[in-house]
Image (tube, rainbow, N blue to C red; front, side):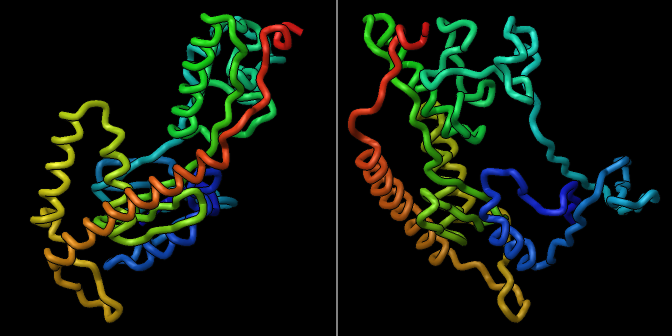
Length: 277
């Protein structure tokens, strides 16, 4: 059972465009997931959960001993202590920065990710956006040390990944290609493995993941259209992993090349003189 505060799941999320895909995955489970929408959880006990529906005064109870709670994010308390006026903050209290990612009040300070808002831009607070902004800051620090012009940020979403269950996922690449099912889950896993900080982390995680995929530690049986469990097939599993790996390399590599080609070229730059003005 999924209890959701809003009337729609994934509302306002970077994966909101995959809502129908997620709903179908929940419905197609061996035990379909029941949705309780527009509900506010009022109490979580050792063996129960209580919630209240919108426009209702009474509460309802779900008997359960397992509750998984997911919540939103909040601003880092440090941001409130910064000497930045309200006129240079957004409605959530985040400091605003120029297109070169410099604070309006302190141009010698750079900020990026989900702790800052770029003027006249609308970037989702995702890790991939933060990575691109961080790269821009690194270039601008080098430019400042060499008395060169600064580079404006030019970040974009390059796709989203979503886990839909055991050996089931969807990879949405550049909003152009959607890979679903086991291949989509393989692309997701390989993408996150690639982002691990050191080779030893990558090796250990990859070994554990491949061991799980090959020997099926989860003992998961995907239901068929008739409702009967579909037996696992190791050969099919290995083929799916290989297909996912090939798709990940081909799609990510090819589309990244296209992205670099379409976004290359001269871009308008902000100088220190323009910033002072």
